[in-house]
Image 1 (cartoon, helix red, strand yellow):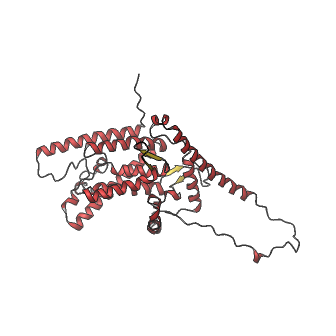
Image 2 (cartoon, one colour):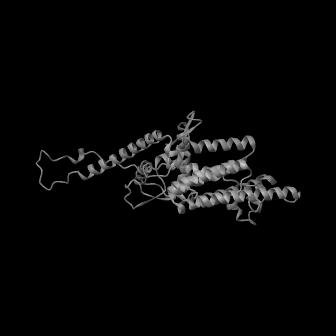
Length: 360
């Protein structure tokens, strides 16, 4: 009997690269430590990204993401790529998933290297220029952002139901934990990469990624650019108590980006279509994280599916009712009305102005 490995092709390749580069990095680090070469001031710059030497090893902007420091981070990274990559590749397709990986990896590492070079120029501390940037922490943050978009209401149970957390809360928990760890334990590179992975992935998914229209309400074509849904706004990644201040800051930054023609403001139709898209996404047949788990806990999954189906049907019913009401409006009569039935134009209600406000 042939053993069948149920892993999408790109995820399988990325897992092999992660394990291979991590093993090579550990072997090179061990050999370097045994040689006792004091001239080498950093780890393995031809695999891990060192800002001061990145000009000589430009490929390190990619390889550094897949070179873990130890066995614990390797296991965490492998689990993230296995479950998260398998889910996202099946939901988006290999081409779109590969584009997402390239954008997050390259932009996160390039911005991080520039930040540490700038910090070195300000402080003149050699440790900032010779720091080693590596690990899949940026991808872990990016995957959590993607899950927030795809399945925000899915509940993850830990310790047999003792702890229940919704997927939409994971990005904030992840960022806060890495930030605290960076301050307390000195893992500042992980904190920087986690924030850059979060910001890069959210910006791409929010404004640039093209996705099919699952709701069927888009009048401009069959594909959507970005995700203008209110639940994917930047403020909704954080606790409700700080939504207002975060939204105000995000909207100010968005206004500057629009003025610089980097981003395009969303129209009211874009927001409504993306909201319908978010409701329909739960019924689009996205693959399960673990196929074996579909046989266990079936009642909970059926309840969640029914709840999502009810939300999608409610949104669709509202759209249909609005469209029907617009079509059934009576056309203006061509007959001459009597003097008693003539309406005074001055008494007519003013036309309601459509709100084109955009939530970032």
